[in-house]
Image (tube, rainbow over all chains, first blue to last red; front, side, top):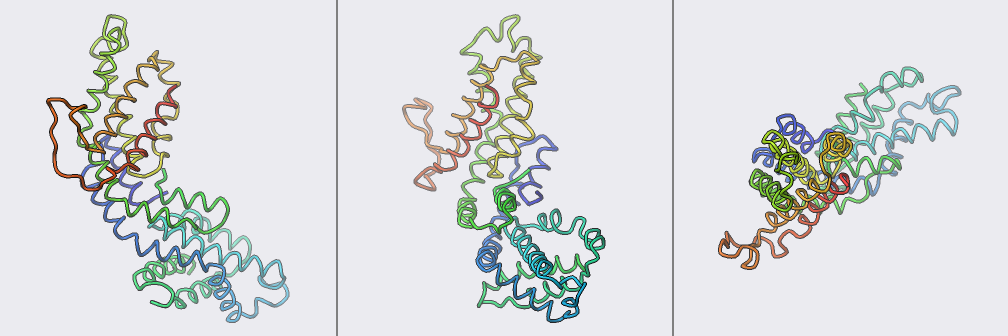
Length: 164
Length: 184
């Protein structure tokens, strides 16, 4: 999984050398910046089900046609799956906060996303709406510190961009 | 390849739950400078450590440099020094990442079989790795004593932390142990 540390090691290994002092500097930079994203990851982990439920409710109230028979949110099974998908994106966002890069979203969320939604006939606009709601719902310092919120919002923006 | 952070993500993903053990990652971050100093201590002394380990291995088993020994002639001795440096390098990578996956995937996978096919004696290899393990611990601890160094004792600087980075020493030793168990 791509992160600052693994990139540094891959480069050093390709050259067959020990980690140089500039390698260690870049790892230290990443470690110094990690406090905010770990805070965001911790807060999100503690409340991820509620955040997902709110985001899901917001997108269903905007696209209420999805409750109609035959639509993506019509049955209880479909409703559970929709909620699960939103929670899934938030979980990947949390992973990205932990790793300090977009690796988890790229590898487990975005790769193949377009093809899957096309094959299942799912609209992406409600996902965008759900994630946008979560993007605008966070508030500093009520939910987390300002810097942590910036990291969190940046990853939600990344996920939204991948869907639009 | 994984590091301490992506390891926790992969573990959490297996149960489709968010990463909950943030505290251990915060501890990793808090000890970050110790880790970097430890990596620097090994990387800065690498060639000395490698040649000492191989020389120590040969001192204990002179047959290695007799005709027919595995470090004879120079060509094979050079290969031995190179391999010791490679092992030490991957241990250093693992210590930097805080996870053994890079060591396992890129160094130890198939190493035992390769050495068996080439006729490299496992006991000698293990001995060299054991010496490097002791050296790495000594360099990270940086606590020379009269008993260990004798007349060459030279104290440089004052201790930065009182516990002498005991947790990092233990972690580095565990990676060397991993090499040893993979070879034997």
